[in-house]
Image (cartoon, rainbow, N blue to C red; front, side, top):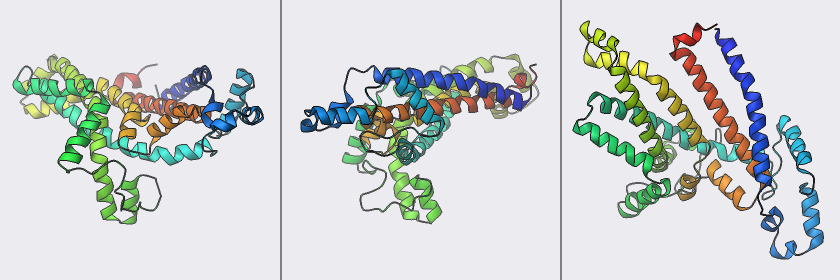
Length: 340
């Protein structure tokens, strides 16, 4: 099967998937018993029937659901996600403002997850049932079991308040001026502007939230890598490679890890999608102005257009991530290239 045919087949499957996601999320958002009128108007304004009716007419809250949904989809096809009830700004503009911060945090988190998870998983599999294996398994268990908010608060209390070895919440220190906006990611923008002091400050602020955000993914990738490596190490071709006189490290990394990567790639893709979809608790605790915090504020104020915008963005993130994983499958698994 050619790459273009494989890609076209995957892209065609995405269309009904996105339509289904938009329909389900729209119905769930509008099934909430809460009234956005009371959440967005002041107490005195909400008591005035004329103001309330004008508000509902402006945002089409009295239209039938199917009319609201068709109107939303028609605008969405034009690239218009609507206007926020809370801020009265276009949803696309607000998402483009908050998304770079989440991309920056999630990318650092997934890099930490990949490096630590694969290394831990390989070490644990190679030295199975030895002390190092038990230590790694305990670390991975803590990573997948410990609540994110607990790790975040513990890190702030110990590393920031008590020891002072990491900076506090936020993307930069209060006295540091953000770099000129190019990508919205402070580390990249500061490098482009040649502002090395801003880069170091932004990088130091990234460390703790990235580690906290990556903790679950590290544990998950470690366990999947260990399990996959144990299965590969028991295969006959591993013994054949050793009998040829190859070094053990070459056998493990070239023949073992390479063949164990398929399930690991799947977990990495899903983990990155999870991180990009916005870590609400992590971004809230660390005052990180990203998609997660934006989603929290939208849900708190019952800003339905913003909620739908975040939902569709998260759906697109997962769809694109899964598409990239499928493409990696095509290159990692030769069998896909020879299917009819």
